Image 1 (cartoon, one colour):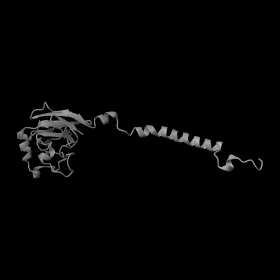
Image 2 (spheres, one colour):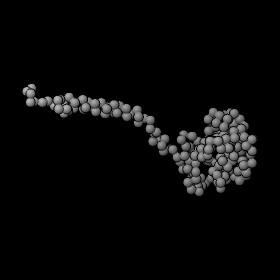
Image 3 (cartoon, rainbow, N blue to C red):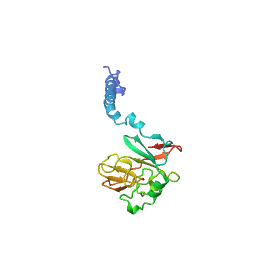
Length: 192
């Protein structure tokens, strides 16, 4: 080179080598992202799981004293329209008589008590109760309108629940859990 000729390296302009480094680096980043995407994508919930996040159940056909079992998130859910007598009996139970005095109601604070009103659909709809139908002992599905309290009875190990889903006798340590639910209309319950 002569003394007046300059190269691009001395002026700080990019060279062909700089371009190749940049292109190779970008290809590496794109390749790494393409390899990583299936692992990241698998962590998203399945479409069927998302579809089950909440369900709406028409309960217009449930007369007082009747119950219905639906499936939500792969678990049975008991919906019961209790009679006035059943509500009265469940309301009269003293908390001291309960094996588990905690509400286990997703709609309430975790330390809410297991009063009948706290486990039911609330004021004006005390007759409606919605619970996850899985025995808290070993996960069996209790039989409805059975047992000495006319609530639920788990024949596997003898757990007895009352009409509010509260454990009264047997090895089950907790009340049946109450999922998040609300009345979307007067005859439709939205669970989840």
